[in-house]
Length: 384
Ligand SMILES: Cc1cc2nc3c(=O)[nH]c(=O)nc-3n(C[C@H](O)[C@H](O)[C@H](O)COP(=O)(O)OP(=O)(O)OC[C@H]3O[C@@H](n4cnc5c(N)ncnc54)[C@H](O)[C@@H]3O)c2cc1C
Image 1 (cartoon, helix red, strand yellow):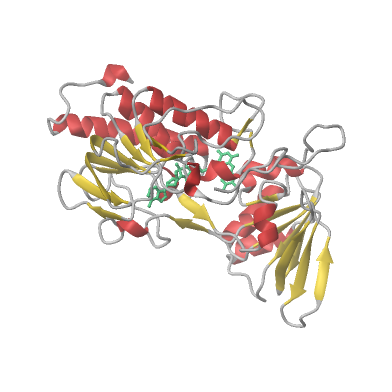
Image 2 (cartoon, rainbow, N blue to C red):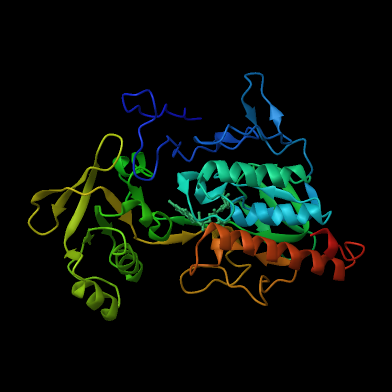
């Protein structure tokens, strides 16, 4: 497990405030945080979450998946806003859900800091704190959460089966909420400064860059959409693309070219994000001449795409041309009893609140389906 760093100080003893992230967040992706508590940043007191895990003598707990329940009416794969909302609803409908949380318990919001658009938090909330609250609420109603990655599923018949770390889990219904992963450039400096000026979500973080000069990297429609959206906040936007030609549609390119705040730089490779505690600039290289160049910006938006986490469902469920799961009849799939929620199918909205809403819908659909199959006794509609 990677140790969480102490927040940098601003000389007053207070954590230094930087765009996006006044606190330090562990971006290691280390799954070792399966101690029943979700790592938290600042703002809220850390929330200790009791979960059904094996406690190791060191005090560090490891959720092995052994010793807990493995058979359930409702199996949920994924523990982002969609999976944990489904768990809250499923648990309150007495479906006793098991959540296989994956190696990124809490999902994408664990790698961001300020979340200012989730309803109910007028002062904003840190992403990890929000997900700790989701998890605590799911566990309060009896969800059993296991921090393991599912490596294989068998959806051929009921009960549906999923395997993780050699343990077989079975569910009469399944909700798939495995989300999507933002693609990153893969630079050490980019990882270090994520949430400190580096972002992959303009809708989420654009607001923090009011009157600042920033860069957007990417060559497709998404990059242009992000750049155009960011013109509402930033004073100047540099669009960087490693190739001569952009993949984006002509109309998007024309809009960007015509925009007085956007400068377009083809053939630029980002070699390093500069800055100790927050983004101060970029070290670029001209792909054609090889000439290095320094660009002073306070933010970098990486808009090179998302990868939906659908690998283990290939062959079982349909995916669209971009690899996202296809839903049928609201939250269903081509297999009856298998439901889909959140970013794993939704590349349009990609927000925590829409993913949570989807998790709610999928749980209600699953509950009604289970009732129709005679797995649950009577309508629990009032339990919602
Ligand atoms: C940098 C950044 C900042 C953002 N900021 C905001 C914001 O301010 N406001 C906002 O509304 N949205 C924000 N978003 C978007 C938001 O995080 C997502 O829309 C939301 O998290 C999607 O929820 P989800 O539950 O569908 O999937 P995810 O959050 O992606 O969660 C997926 C879950 O599936 C699990 N999983 C994956 N594969 C497996 C497997 N094989 N077995 C078991 N589990 C698996 C993962 O461990 C994870 O728990 C941000 C996104 C990013 C990347």
